[in-house]
Image (cartoon, rainbow, N blue to C red; front, side):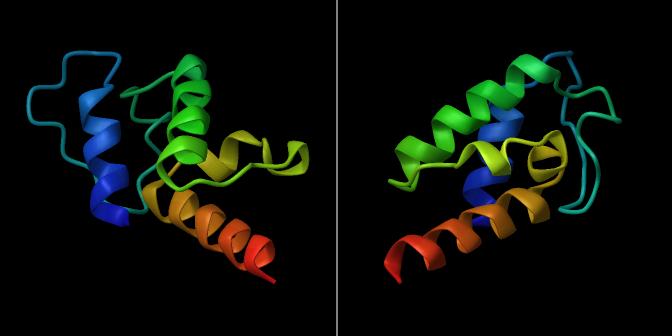
Length: 83
């Protein structure tokens, strides 16, 4: 899952960053690789790619700031939707 997320991020970089390098725990907003519009693109990607719905309560920028946070959010939603 993390590899899918990293790939999506790299294919949607806002600034030209060549071979952007970031870890799963780096804040991609603080690094300047993406902007708030990207969060909406990521939301659409998550809901379509992983066939789930992100609740309004989960629509906070920190949930989309790192690969780890995004993957954690997806797993949380998958767990709650399968229960």
